[in-house]
Image 1 (cartoon, rainbow, N blue to C red):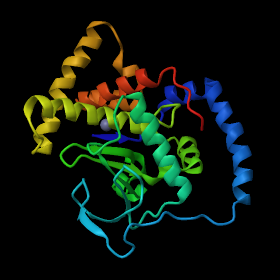
Image 2: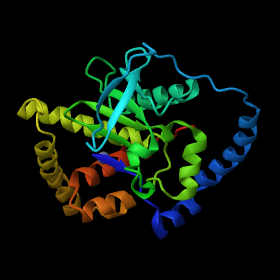
Image 3: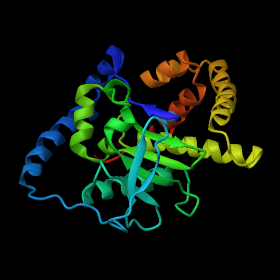
Image 4: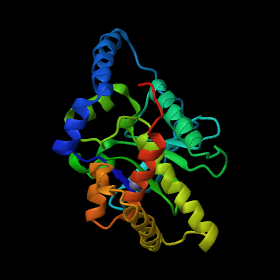
Length: 258
Ligand SMILES: [Zn+2]
């Protein structure tokens, strides 16, 4: 259920270049960069227990993740020991989580996923072109967040490199992942607790295919949603394509400050 960062492709890049938003980004980027150099020392988040790390298999299963819980109000938040985030990045995380949850009418309560902020390396399986910015794992109700999503500088770097999903909103990653959460909630309400991640994914692909078919019957071209949606369609990942469609629709007229 990854929101994989894929290159724009020629069409996406052209769209971006046409967009006024992009030029605004560039202006903001240049201005902010100057301001950034004036910042002297970054302050890092406070851990609940500085010594105690929890170690568990990472969702991709080929590595372990060692992390510590931080103080973060109602949101159960863990930071990968290799990631280390600043207070500013924590603010950004909370902003994106709260705004995205609000847009999807999701309450931040005990059922909200635990959040793990991790490194680009882990999210990319060490391959930049396939790097995910977020991932929601239904069986453990965990939302993984790539640290790169949390700073303006790294988001702009991703935009320039072309290794990001085609989207003008910085909320698109979390909104996308929260649609996966809503799907998982609807599924377990109907079929009971999710105990087999693979079976769940197979089922949700089937359920999503019905939705994709409905859109295609209405002559909606889901391939045009994003390059990621197009790739997902080719791979038969209708869950991802349908999630991209919903994310795009939801964020259509939402203006988000960078
Ligand atoms: Zn996804």
